[in-house]
Image (cartoon, helix red, strand yellow):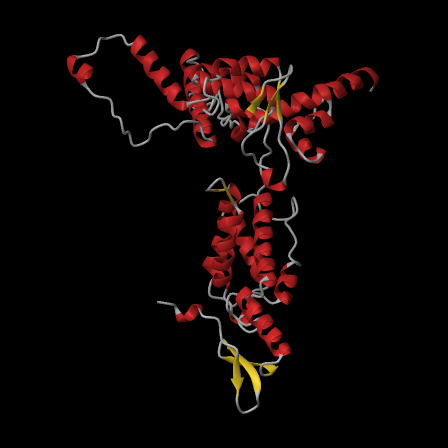
Amino acid sequence: MHNPSLRIPAYRLHRASGKAVVTLNGHDRYLGVHNSHASKIEYDRLVHEWLANGRRLPGVAAPATTVDQLLVAYWQQAKEWYCKNGRATSHAHNVQDAMRPLHERYGLTPVDSFGPLALKGIRETFIERGLCRSSINKHIGTLKRIFKWGTENELVPAAVFQALQAVSGLRRGRSQAKESVPVKPVAEAYIDAVLPFVSRQVAAMIQLQLVTGMRPGEVVMIRGCDLDRTGSAWTYTPATHKTEHHDIERPIYLGPKAQEILMPFLRLDPTLYVFDPREAEAERSALRRKLRKTPLTPSQARRRRNRRPEVAPGDRYTTDSYRRAVSRACQLADRKSHQLNPEIDTHQVVVPSWHPHQLRHNAATRLRREFGLDTARVVLGHRTAAITELYAEQDHSRARDVMGRVG
């Protein structure tokens, strides 16, 4: 059975006037002389605009649209935009975080009543919730884009979006918002400290990031079929990467050091992921059995392995499981340091926790220092040198040496 709400309004004759008419949302629209070519063109135009506007008359329903209706309509589109390989991207979660206080405080407010002061009120909410200044500016920019999309789709009057553009971003030192802590490279001592406490797979990923500058999401998904091993430097082309939606290629070059790290993990089947957490778990279990000081009891020997554990490792690491492995190793390394040095205050952190993404900053700093900013930009896959500047710590040792001699 057909749904009457999905029918296209009919082209009809208005007998009293002899004109063609179509009824859209209860409003009669006269099209000209019935059966004329011009009236049929006008009918097609109006119906197409009505369908494109979500079966609403342009300019009629927009003022009655509430903020919640705008958010729901925008999110239906955003779920498709911010999706990669069937999974929501991190930006999709950022959009939800930006929309949440808008829904909570102004959900039932008509969009034409939402203005700059209301947007600044949302900004204050973000400040009260402890977000840093850069994150607040990004969220406010997201909300502006939502209203821009609403204007484009005739859900929001153009004057509303134009007024919201007057709300400027927060400036450093000009608000109560806290500043974000810049991401820094990891000290080599902290990297060396965690290596004994991670699997050989995770250790290899750490070392690969250090020599190549890969992102964590790129190193966890290496497969043999993604490697071109011709030439002195191999080329790794990730199956997916962060900037692919901008039509940007991301070749990653693997020199002799990277090849040496990777070789022990290459598989006969090139479609398998190189770093397999199942393999790491099997090796860990074998090592525990080897180091066991007491023999298994008969009941332990008869115990069957759970073939369907609640949380089973997949066929490759994810960025989250990689991060958790490093974080866990940092805690173990810190605990070991306190055991070896009892005089250290128990509350003092000897090996602080660090994130695998910081290793990209290590590589960027080294590449910039040894080969210059342009080379570092190409290796890291950045479009502009300004982005590389954010990753590469400026090396002050040369400036300090020069000024020690001439200053």
